Length: 276
Image 1 (spheres, rainbow, N blue to C red):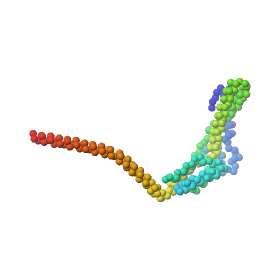
Image 2: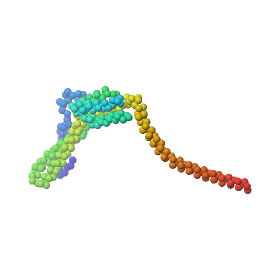
Image 3: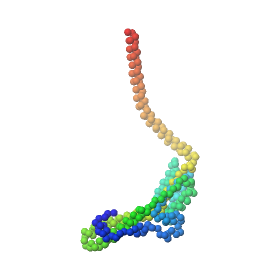
Image 4: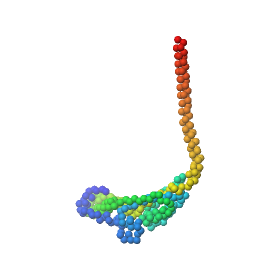
């Protein structure tokens, strides 16, 4: 946030700011708690807590694709729970697996967890919580100050009258303040959405439900490719071995020649000594 000379002028008459803005835009009405499920009541009792769940499910490898589609279909149908698919990935290769990342209201997350729990064995489940009270309070306080500053700038613009130079600078500052207000409004909306909804990360894998014949069939299916890779590696290795073999042969042949000459020279020397 920029604070030029106009801000200094406005702050001279600015009364002490209270914390009334902190409870305005991010508070949950008490009447909305009535008739809610335990998950929604939990979120209402903790209006500044953002929850994120992680679920690992062991599913038969032939059913990973169907469970993956079922979760997406359930999310599409949960419009009342504001369910949104944030990320998805499906791997149907040698090791089938899938991951999904969803966002929904607490009731929608509970429905998805119930749906997933009957699709396979739960191998891991966890929940993390993030307290967003401080950033929510900071943004609300900054937004209240910006609104007050904009009001004072508008008063200054009226007082400026026909002073063109002052009007230009005031309008420029008003445009900057408006941009700051819109940015903070967007951030507050993101935080509000984060505490009113929850994140669910789903990991589908076939750890204990993998077919006995699948590794064998995969090995047979990959036999020709592995054979070609082995032959190519052998040929590549041979290309490296041949030059070294030639060099070693030449070295051994030369060393043998030198050894033979040295041996014959010593023999002649010994014979000469015997003759003397």
